[in-house]
Image (cartoon, rainbow, N blue to C red; front, top):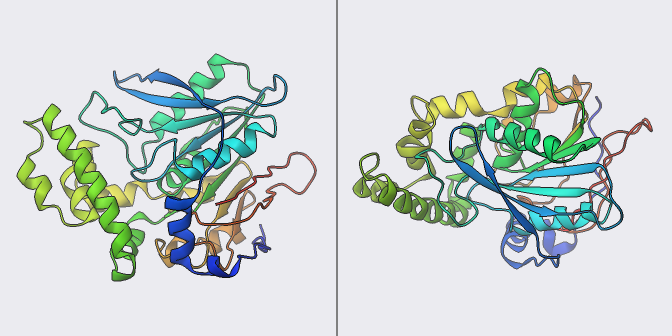
Length: 322
């Protein structure tokens, strides 16, 4: 599939990757009606929470499911913005809070990671049981985008109701992108992530004092150290390198079999060069890659329609104001 030519034109200040990223994360406000929260009991005895926003006009049988990024939640501005845009277009919207991301620590020692597609699958199955949706669209941001792309590429028999997907600012090569995030240019971001993840680990340590030690948590001085100490071990991987290798969505992209749009800004300082899968997209029937010059990490600022099917059968129009 030919690469999509981007017509995104960033306002002057938003040509700065850092300004775009910081504005989108800390300054953007989204006005949207209160959600209904639903607890999902998972098959392994754990839980996660969904935040629902229902279609504004009528009782449509179409649904969007959205996944968030590292240390995020359903109340992040990019999640709320997607919910607002698509509920106004006649979609019910289910925003996933990954395990421990809704304000309450989950029951098990494990939590979530970039490749935990089993949780997404359970949410999709639940939504299909809940209501007979005829059309489901999936969307994911950053870590949640990697999880989404992995799910699409590794699942042989997708539910027929899933028609398309869009992923934004995705580190599809996890290990290489982590090295980018740990560089000096991203120091403030990586420190912010590290502080939040360590605080979550201290809370988990109180529940599982025999499985993780406060001293070891305190010694973690990088995201890699967090993944070595906890993420990899808690989810059944040998170490961080094994986790990155097996969960990176890059290897699954050639197997994607529904129209899928990947939007990665060229100036996203979080992403490695290998996370821009130019060769795969050129040879794929279904993976559409759009690479705007600007946008930072989930930092696009204007309403823009990204259409991933142009043949008239079905069109996915996402309005972003990030």
